[in-house]
Image (tube, rainbow, N blue to C red; front, top):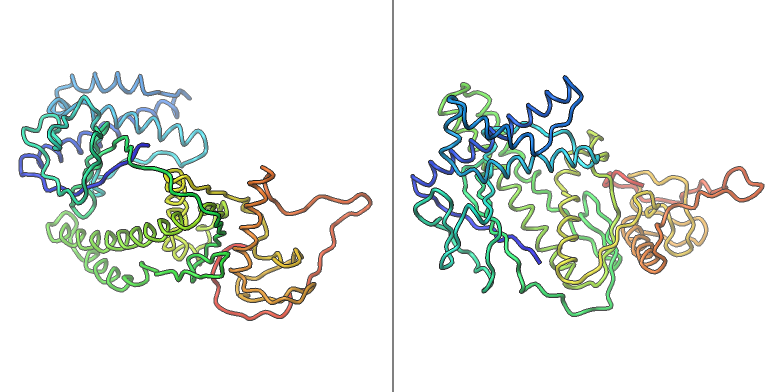
Length: 403
C-alpha cells in the first residue's frame, strides 16, 4: 500500500536558492506548455499531448533566453508536464475545470522520481544538491521501505515540506467488527450519526474571521511591489494556513476514530460543487469541508479494510420517516424536528436522516443496487399521491442545503 510521509525541513541558503529556482522553472515550463496547448486548440482545434510538450521543452532549453532551464534537474520539469497531462485528462473527462496558470506567490512544488534523488542512510539527497535535506523527522519511515517519489513543496507562508512516497507494508487491516454507522453531514452539526450522536462543527474559519479581515485590510493599504506588502501578504497567508491546519487536524482525528470503531460507514454522495453555488451557504459549506471529510474516509477505509458506501444524492434521507417509511413532500431547511403524519413519531431531522442513510447503504451492500426515490408510475395512475402534511415542526436556524 503506497503512503506518503510528510515532513517539514529547513534548507540551507544554497539549497533554498536551488530549490526556489527549480520551483520557478517548473512553474514556467508548466505555464508555457499550458499556453501552447491552449493556443493549438483555439487556433487549430488541435490537441497537444505530453509527447509534443516534451519536445517543446527540449527546444526551449536550447534557446538562449531560456538557457537557465539547464541549471536545474530536468526531472521536475518533465513531471510538471505529466501533471499538466493529468489535468487535461481530468478536464476532458468532466472531473475538473480547465487547467489554470500557476502563480508565483502561491508557493509551488517539484516532484523528483528515483533518477533525481538518492536515499542513503535514511537521508534524502536531491539532484544537484551537495548536501542532504535537513528534515525534521517527526516520525520514522518504516524499515525496509525505499522511497519511489520525493515531492518538495513551498507553501504560501514560506514553509518548506517534503513528501516521501513509499510502499508501506506496515498498513494492515484492522480487526473486523459488526458495527455499522450512517453519517449525515451538516453545518451546525458537522455530522450526525445513526447512533444518535452529533459532532459539533468547530467552524475554524469563523473563529479567525476577524483576525483575517484585519490583516487583509492592512495588506490592501500597502503599495504593490513593496517589501511591506510582501510582509503583509505573509501575515495573511499565515492566518489562512492556521485555519487549514486546524481544520485538517480535526478531520483526521474524527475520521480515524470513525474508521477504527466501525466496519461499514455510509455517507451521501453529495454534489458539493453545485451546493457552493448558493452564495448564502457557500462559506459555511466550504468551512465545514465535507469533501475533505469524505476523501479521508475513503482512503482510510481502503487502508484498514473497512467498507465505505456512498448512496445516491437524491435519496430523500431527511424527508423519509425512519419508522414507517412515509415520505413527506417538503422539508424546509429551518425545520429541525418534525412529526410523521402517518405514524406520529417525532424525529430529529439530522438523526433521522443518518438512520435512513445507514438503512439505504446496507440495502445497497446486500442488493448491489442504487437507492433512489420511488418515482415509478403505477398502471392507471398519473402521479403518485403523497401527503402534503409535514407535521408539527420545531423551527431553528438553517443548517444544510439539501432535502
